[in-house]
Image (tube, rainbow, N blue to C red; front, side, top):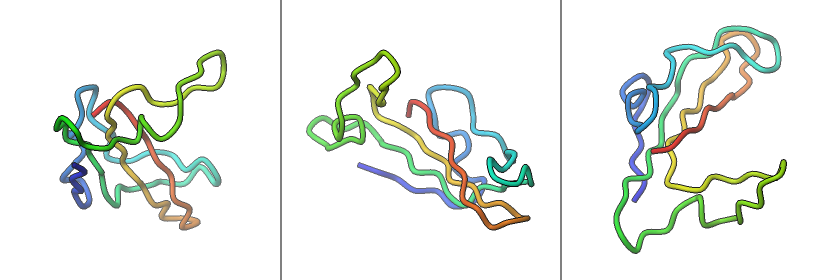
Length: 87
């Protein structure tokens, strides 16, 4: 099951480090703020992003567990940016 949190509300939804409150834009180096975080809450039998593609390794990686993903938006150029980690 995927849960979605708006703005900064979901930045702590991860088994790894919290997502940062701002990141640098990959396009213009401007400041990006979080729009939302999607968190795959573990429930046996659910479908997960990790099952969409195989994790081949050696430079062709895919996530191997349920994920958390925060999508940011750049204040300068309006470019979306994202960070992903293990949910």
